[in-house]
Length: 411
Ligand code: HGY
Ligand code: MN
Ligand code: MN
Image (cartoon, rainbow, N blue to C red; front, top):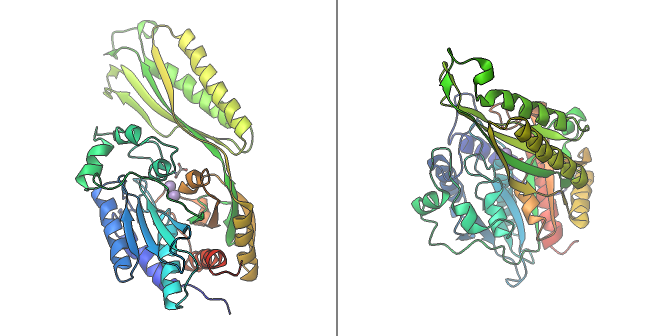
């Protein structure tokens, strides 16, 4: 009989964490470095306090809880995810990977298993990238794919600088983020899409992740009165915005696997009887094939140039603010996930991650993989996000198996 984690304890903690930053619609809002995010971390650390895990934090607030192994010099196996959420987030995105990781450590304690190498449970800062861009920020600086000075200067919508939030929480005295030697990284996460549920699969054997590009666009014209000024004489950014949105939608239909999202549009001054002086918009392009994503990128940039030339009286500016390349996960780790699912008679299938994860950054530095479990109706980044107790337990058990295979000698 294979050992298993304590599913009741995991579920109870998922529901308790969901109460922090709970939203009326039944989700959670713990935007990164907010007081709610801090409260969630404090609750997590309370749960860890009863164990003798060595606690470490870095200057961007990444947390590491180490369960010692027999060979203190051996490179640790890293597990974990994030506790920050979208403003209209759910109760499982990120949280599952952190609390299932804690379950793995506590289950090893309760089974009195001495692993041959340490295990570090990681809580990465600002995976979501909604308050401060870009996403996967904490793991990005730790893995050296994002520059610390650049991210410290990031500002949220209200103008608060990330560096000031870091200082407010007292992280600024901590060591600079740096991924110490790590043997590998495994992250459990909900799929955040419809495939596993639609196919009746419990485990997603994640083989890699799609590429992601984010852009910020500004379209500046001239405010004027909505009444007297004839349409032909206006410097109205909205007609340009219409073409821009059409361009993004056309690129999004380049093939079945492309994904394009206009996530935010803002018109200022935003008065009903004022022709806007300015429009700001974000674009998120994704594709699992690096060459196709490059084509999408080129079409977008060329489309901006064409629009710029066609509207000389409008100042159209667009800049790419983030590029997370296509990643492939480690074959050996992927095999261990597959073997665990099979041994536990859990229906599984290979899958490429559509959502970005901290694992994408770790994969650029150490052997990495992910384990997915289904989420209801494929909905995430939404208060309706839901995963069943049975599925989260199954995912955590597969994580336990993979960690044991990597740290208990029975490879
Ligand atoms: O953008 C993403 O895919 C992730 O949720 N940060
Ligand atoms: Mn996530
Ligand atoms: Mn997310």
